Amino acid sequence: MSQPHWDRLLLNATLATLVGETPFGLIEHGALGLAHGRIAWVGPMDALPDAPAQLAHRVQSLDGALVTPGLVDCHTHVVFAGQRAHEFDLRLHGADYAAIARAGGGIASTVQATRAASEEQLFAQSLPRARALRDDGVTMLEIKSGYGLTLEAERRMLRVARRLGRELGIGVRSSFLGLHALPPEYASRRDDYVAQVCDSMLPALAAEGLVDAVDAFCEGIAFSREETARLFRRATQLGLPVKLHAGQLSELGGAALVAEHGGLSADHLEHLDEAGVAAMAAAGTVAVLLPGAFYTLRDTQLPPVEALRRHGVPMAVATDCNPGTSPLLSLRLAANMACTLFRLAPEEALRGVTVNAARALGLHDRGTLAVGQRADLVTWNVRQPAELCYWIGGALAREVCVAGESVAP
Image 1: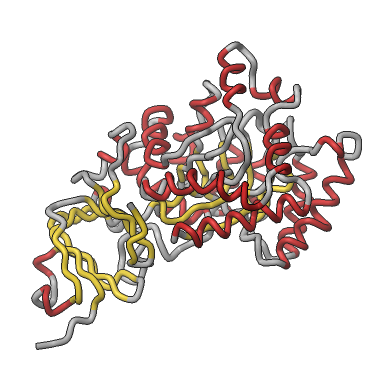
Image 2: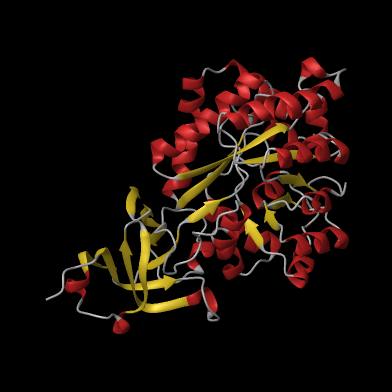
């Protein structure tokens, strides 16, 4: 009898592989072999090459439970101090996002709280948020800086981001968001701050290995297209990929700009014209939809989903977890919102939180259930993939695995 050569074999699973031409890449009565942190075999049970006991050290029947790739939350601001529940109240009494920001609230208030927090305090406050995302199926998490806006405070944020990944056993990609808001001490020295970000902060943090990508907020209340382009040129010199908050409140050509620089993604995109969509399609830039912010701000301007479909732009979905405009701690709920508010089909939404979200981070070794991919996967207490977008809330994840190892619940 041959010796088992897989670490683990999952039997009688409903597999949403997201590979092939069938909806969801669905394989019913499927099997999944895992070895050395990778997917070693995937297919129908009746196609297994040998008796299950001869194939793996551990064999487990899932009784028809759904298995998907691990979820990828490709746009978050999970690391911050404090909270902004009072702004939620202000908006319900008529204040808008821009008015709150001009009055010293918004990002500026979180900057003040984050600067005042020690690294340990920042970690302690951020850990429950990241854990909630993981326990709901997230195996890869993007985390942005941008609430420090000084070298030391941005460094603390990025160090905490790395530490969260180690603590929770999940992957983390960190994005430097120095051009998030103009800090108050630079109120009359805007050019000096942009120069500080481009010529001092970014090179120093990149040299310390804390930056995986470079982001900016290109908006009327934030930074201009020209200021963003200056940062992108510096990032390119340092060999770092770029992404962008673009078109959330107005169309400033941000999506076209990030596409021009071969960027990974343009995010938000409620105000996106046809030229921007075409530029993204030509560059292979992913559109990251953030329905949590749309919902929280009670926005009415929908992102141009039909145009994105027509041009073949891949669409990802993320939580945008942040203290002011998207205090959202479930990527599944973001997928539900993308279906309900933006009219994505459940399969589009599931691809949006797996394979397309991975692509938005420049990752191509996860996001599908295919041989050779990382064994990042989730077993769910449901049987049909559309249920992941259908159920509103609840604890559906039975087991979350990263590189074949169980990390939750």
